[in-house]
Image (cartoon, rainbow, N blue to C red; front, side, top):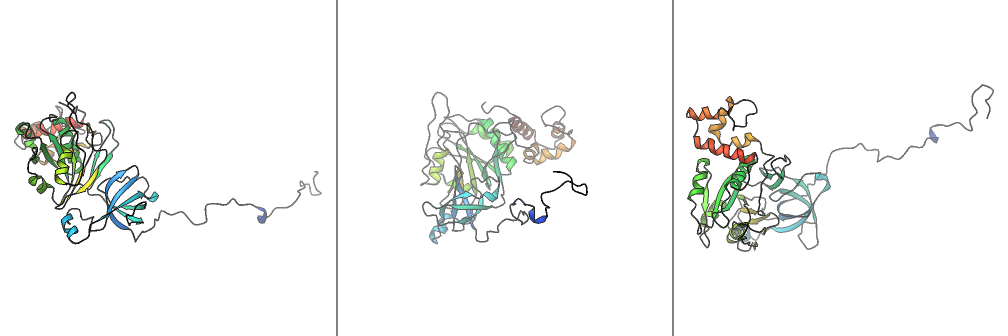
Length: 356
């Protein structure tokens, strides 16, 4: 092709806007973060989680966990129904655990082979967490909305593990959940030494023996959402079966050689108490990582000591010579036993072994 008379290159044709091909996009509507309102969603209470499927209870004022008792609902014919649900994609990466209050859409009839969707997660009042180990800051949610952590430990067979109790207390203080010590197998050993160890912390306790009356335990659990935690073989499942006769939780036996129990609960499950309130039974634990815990949250459980930390240097671990709490206690502002207890808990947080 040669140039034309004007010196410009020859073109086979001239192009205009009608010849320009525009690649189809994903739509002309601007992207938005608005989500469906789901005004028809129904409230539900998550009672079990299993491989991406959530068992939720719907109906009967089920979300009033601390007020409305199961006995009253049954009398009124308003027993809740179980509904299997999956998490909606729009929830993103939000995790859902036992104890969560959620909203469901879809088929909430609870009939076999039906599946609802969890589209909304209500704000939580508390979250019990653990980490894989003390160097891992990644939080692993265990139970939501509990207001009481029941630390179940045997007085014998297997013997108590005070440092595990310490770690669970740290987790309770961090989550702002009230702790309660439940000492089982009192028919095998006296509770005096263990009770004396935790007396400075002011942690309430209950003593349970085989075949004994559980009325005091029921009274402490009534109209509350309590999570039961303890290592295997301490009698936690036996306790649950005594409180909720139709629970049917498997009971384990302690290995005579290792002194440890076998895990009988594979996942957490919420069970309604006959007289009102809920207990959440969790799998037996052999370790409880505290890498996510903040020191200030533990200090909050010791108000008399927390006030004295204003004189501590920045970044003080409250366990070294530079800590001002020793002088604070020496001046009579706090109990020396409280300081010893605090430092024991902080030592547990910083990676002390679980076993004595």
